[in-house]
Image 1 (cartoon, rainbow, N blue to C red):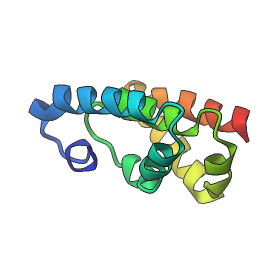
Image 2: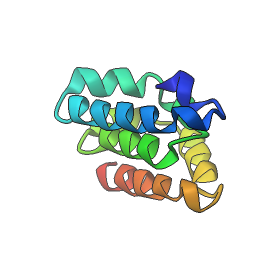
Image 3: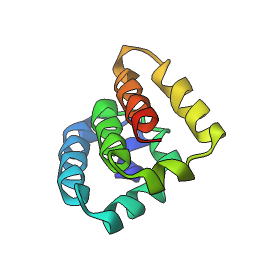
Length: 104
């Protein structure tokens, strides 16, 4: 997922969307899965394609998981805010930020 999300290859867009949605289902209520996705959290902020799917995956990682939310530092939150400001396609990251603030 990380490899495809950081490329500009739009042919991989649908594959990445499906992979993100599958991962969302796997990590829902799965602490180990959430921790594994979180390990690459900052890397996911470099996304270039399937942006909303990646943001939704990150939102699922943070949802109802105070332990993971507390591991994010101020610089991570600032970077996520900057990503969310990249344009309409990136606005789903505002939902990720909202989830973080609700849990924290």
